[in-house]
Length: 578
Image 1 (cartoon, rainbow, N blue to C red):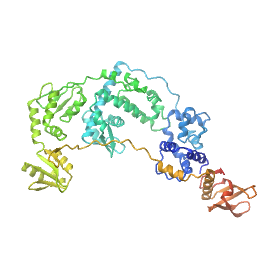
Image 2: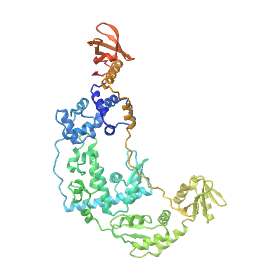
Image 3: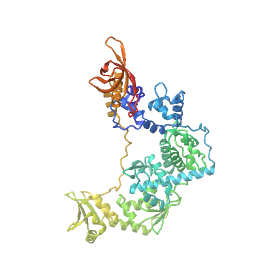
């Protein structure tokens, strides 16, 4: 039991609950920590392992202040932060176990305080192009995740199969994890159950203009930066200083490089390390200003060319809201400043499944087409709409799923279709029935390219989202109220007496030799060397080494106890005054 735990335990007991909760959160304490009292808490926080887990989280300024305190210097403005982490005492000196761990730690050289160099026009143009490409690639990820959640590895990166599929569409596989990290930080994608899903914020973000999309991503990127990279005014430090900002974190070099890569993808830093003009307000803690970036982006268009071969050509970057809707009707074949789209029976059927109608599709295409609607495309839309809903899926009175159709031949085909065997469809005079849920039956039929439609109890079509946007909630903060209440319940009015009891218990467990000072009835004191052997009923038992007799001493009469010969197996040292 460490003698240094007692002052920290007293400080913890006097701290407000909110301060304790913040300390436990910062030190990574579990909510169900098996601590009986504040002495247990202090000993755990001063454990070498706990200290070593905390040091990598310190910023460069905090690390320098702590190292200076170990060398006898004033920790300055960082003293309150280090005290709140349980690393310093109230007088500004380090906790002794902390000093032992920190003494062997090295610190980097002084910072380079110069501001980054402004980028030249050519570098800015390349950064703007990179930002535009990254925003478009993130939009593709959000749309893919909306269609079908993307699989993740245990570590949070995209699965290899997903990377191959996305890379085939033109986005380099090596930057996909960084693009996902940017999107997750912005709240437009969310992870859970090893899946990557679109969020409600992502749905709205898709319909923003390109410059507004970039602004949302850049400001979210800044907000997600680690403490060591942030400035007091809400901006970030010059990139040249980033590699040194968490000096005692062995993983910081790799993490810092990843953050810099994301900054590069967003066009916030050029390939040669200079700074584009649109990055300056963000670095200074101001609102993002995309004016300079917007001047370098290609002009968005709101019209397309519809062609007889069932394709569409956008002569420039299509306005995001139009692009999102068009991609719900047609499959995009190429992505560039001039994108192409192809209409198929499957893409039109998908649009009808998500709530479009033949009239709404043709009206939309007519509004954005520079060439009218070619007859083959109109015919495809009308023919697909006529077949859509030929198969009706609904829940019957018993809770089972029914499949009906005016085309008996189609029902017979579904009844023997091997791809539908998992549905266990059974044929009767009125159609097909299944014990599988309605939505599962519907999507299985849709995947098998049957013209299925879900209908409600009133017979009207229903629009069902295959992958509904999950409700996003902020991550729940750790709740230390139960732990703090348990510690408070064991907090007695006499901390000295409580500490002495713990010292005596530790000495008995270690079979240690104690130097004890006893208050005699006449007011005098007597000192004994006692081999502690038992504690109970408010009495300490042990052998008096000088008299070679067993003694039993009332604990209330013990003024102080100090270990002078601890057991070699215990490795403890205790001491305290009552």
